Image (cartoon, rainbow, N blue to C red):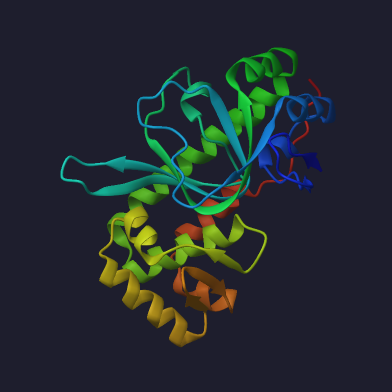
Length: 244
């Protein structure tokens, strides 16, 4: 459990994969430096090009790294949750955000300053190891997404994204608007609406007032493409606790 440091009440479960994949003393160090905050829907965590002052480690929720076009359209480069962190440019040697991270599904996360993260990496190499493993997994997700967006139907892509969102929350019901799904996947709003209606008719999910409820996950899995399983296998490796 981690205790909030910014006025939120109560304790929160540690669910971020990187936190769970490091030595206990390294986790204790990160927890002592972390500020736990809510992730609110449509919250912009960084502007593209902004200097990254904190790495953000979600424990619940979905953050999409959005790319904006000159004509006003936007699409997600990739989405992430408790399997990773916001601020990948930091670990790859950059200091500025290369996209706009936007919260699509609410939750909560640990904010850790770059200075504290530098100290953690210096003292506990297992922290950098875990972050680099995530960077590799993120690369796999990006490559799969390119293939998926080119080859698979809208229903398969939407079902895949909803399954991934379901994996990143602690309940069957979570907040997400159809407009957000259309922005993330670069699909027309009418297309998303039609697909969601079809999934509801199958009994896979229900949707009301911006809240999706996964009613029958198996049916949602049946509607998704094989990309979902490939990406999930990459992220769901057994924890590797380093000895360094």
